[in-house]
Length: 411
Image (cartoon, rainbow, N blue to C red; front, side):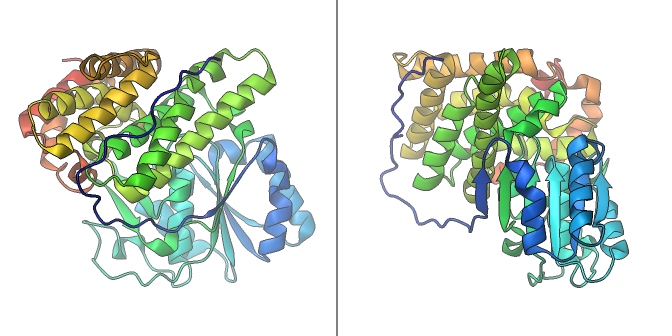
């Protein structure tokens, strides 16, 4: 594949603002790395607890891992996670896990990793996650008495492996985070071979979630030079990788593309953890609570209308911050369109067109089939102003957010 060279340096604001970067796990990447996982678990744990997605538990890899660990000592404790993670799932594992667990191993998509993260934080005291869940819990302070845990993502999307928050939900009620620095994984293992068995719809949803996280953290008002560099490189890795993965005719090309997707997703977790997100995720959180739309599909459908709304509003703003965000949007437009010669205004329109096409090719097209109706829209708008929405490059009024939801629903 031919890669066009793009200027990676965005326009800087007049004054660099103070910032900090959160601690990161040790990150290992490699094709076939998962074959070394059992030996590593045996080195670092005498009594591990495995939290696996259902697809991993039912796979040949999952069966082999459990068997290999059993040969090293006692059979490991294994819990299986499917669907959106809930407080009830976390509390059940915390209350029923055997005594003496010294490390949590999370293997799967974002749901399995979020559950593993929460269990690692709660198992030492066997508290309920509802003691600490933001906005809906008891509001108790969490003091960080967490077990160490190892994250093995099997999709290329959420970036949960590098963040400090476990996102849990009750359908129709809430989607909230249990968050603390002590919940960051000690190690992350990235192996593109896992992507070979990911169902296409899951691959598409998680990949589009990663792109959304990279773009939103790039233009957020909380971005800093470190997150800019990581987000920009993540989008360069992501660009063309999903097409290449699906179209590859040999294993090496497929794994190269899968590796780019997986690394982009992990970078998106780092950037969202340190720069925040924006209005797409501000809407996607309550949308996931009040409809049954998968998170990645919600992001895919909202990304073009929210990006268009941001760009058109920023073009009427004369502040230096608006100019910086517009320059960044233009950069990404040149990247995704493949035309490095586009002037800024044309590049921004090209970005919107590229995002529309990505939704048409890999997204849901419309979110109406997931229950996004007028009633859901009212509830989403009423519950979207906290969290990720605060990082958007400017405040979008309710009528603009409604218009974006209507566009995502195909109204």
